[in-house]
Each structure stands twice: as C-alpha cells, then as structure tokens.
Length: 119
Image (cartoon, rainbow, N blue to C red; front, side, top):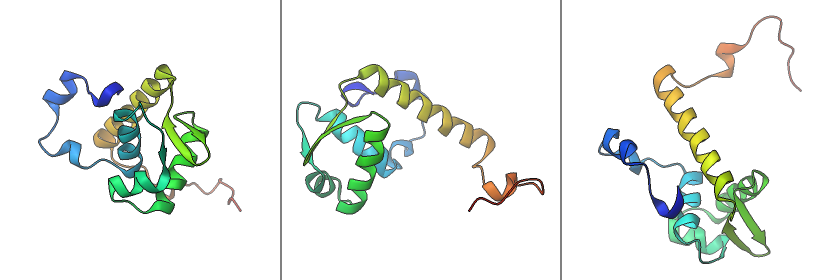
C-alpha cells in the first residue's frame, strides 16, 4: 500500500471500476499514505475527500486503535510502521476476496437457538 501503489497482478485482474468503490476508511488511509510527508487536521482530510468531518474523526479514531495512524492533537498522519500497514492491507484484501467468493456474512444467518442474546 506504500505510496498509493498496488500489486500489478491485482491491477491486471481488477474490473475497470473496481478501484472507484473504495470505502471511506480506505480512502482516508490511501490519502494519508499518499501524503505521508504531512500531518493533517481531520477537517482538512474531510474537505479533500469530500466527506463529513465527524465521520472522518470517528474513522481516524478507529484507525488509531488499530495502529494505522498517528495522532498529536489536532493532527493525524499515517503510521510509520509499514509492516503494520501492509499487514492490515493484506487482511483487508483477504476479507474482500472472501466476501466476493462467499458473499457477505449476516449475523442473523449465523444465529442458532443456543446463542445467548447480547445485551
């Protein structure tokens, strides 16, 4: 995922519009990775990506918990741990491939009579 690149095999095997359907989380990570020489305020990231500032702030907080971004109030930057970033990207692509192959999981489909309700 470094420098906004992808593996050439992934590029060659992708549909023409596959890369346009990035989630907001992916778009934020890719933006920060593409601009890894700077730290950004959440509002500026939101403005650049045309997203809601509150949504960007929430996503950034979750990414920080996963060790994918760094934060020094009020600025955010991509992690400098490239191994962690690459690992997260591989896991994400694995989940996407599984979803494409097997369909999206729905909790109600997995529930059994023996499961306890979570309060």
